[in-house]
Picture (spheres, rainbow, N blue to C red):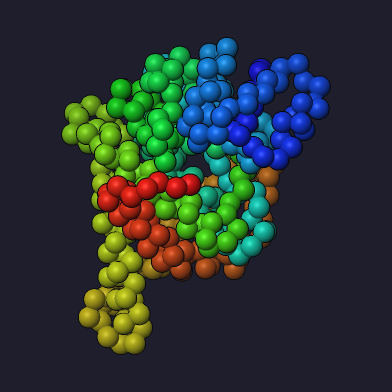
Length: 318
């Protein structure tokens, strides 16, 4: 195993600390600061193995994570180009905002990837922790220079007929934004990345063969769902609580307990993964209750901002 660290123009003592390690299989690549896609591609040039695993600098891997994600890539069907790992929140005790995100990663994001993999196409092999077949990524010319480089690369591979897998027991823990400002910037970026993917590879929906096209089709609908959720459903709920059922009626409000039920099902499914790895789910009752009640109310308006900015072609900032 070789370890390649790409230093993307850091201004701290990253390189000095890395150089102090006596590791014969560690190589440090000092790149001119140019964004994540360029850094990833600089690292890709140096890879000598058939499989490359990408992780972010703030990703902490479970001791079995590398073995499990590579085993999944080798045991999946031969046309599998990549396998996404299961990324969860490490700093969930840092703030109330990270407590909410802990449940989003633990239930929502993980469950979505599990469902998509059943359709032979996980839609995002995230840069935070994923394994790729080196030759296939090089043939695809690496990560594109866009704000959602991992989304667009994954969709390009799916469009070319490759399969993207998911390994729920290959776990990496990442540092989530600790405040609303950081959360806003991250989710806005993710929303813009989805629109980038739709603009470049949305034609998968109209192709006859790939099952992943079904979920790409859902992504065409999601911006409209977020818009109407933020600007119609939420005001309707507020009015309904005052007895004015102009937009949302009593039967529509049943969606709330159904959402609770769906989250509980996802929770127990992911809890079994933790038990298999001898991990314990942290106690965070307040976080999960607020997550189920108001998290989407915060996230949908942010996503709408990202969608509109990308559609309008506004300047992209990390």
